[in-house]
Length: 135
Image (cartoon, rainbow, N blue to C red; front, side, top):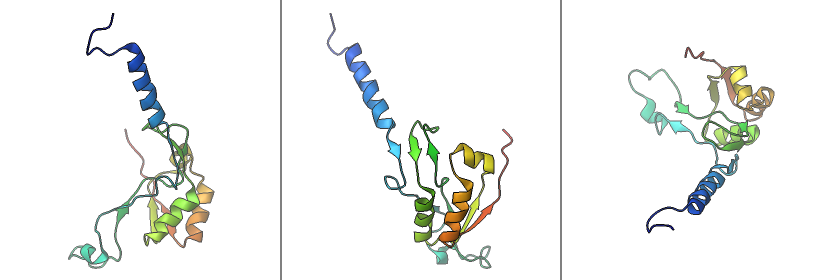
């Protein structure tokens, strides 16, 4: 006999199934366009005494072209490297400094040759400056 207010096993498992189904949505370049977190909203905001010799803005973003069956967040990714890079270009990006090494990019499912080609097509300079984690 079930008490009022108690959660039945049937309801509990249907809630788990619903949550799992929701989390397992595939993230694509179209369903979730690339987001750039800009340090300054405009180039003029970036001009201070310390940065007066610099041109442009600094933005951070996650790796484009991610293809994973299950990421750390539990989601599946089937992003398109070319679409992602051209989304960067549409925001005025002219230079990408990638902090991941080739192994890390491959682990994320990023095809390095396609990444370079997409950047070339979009007239974006790609510089790899991998940071080795010392964890």
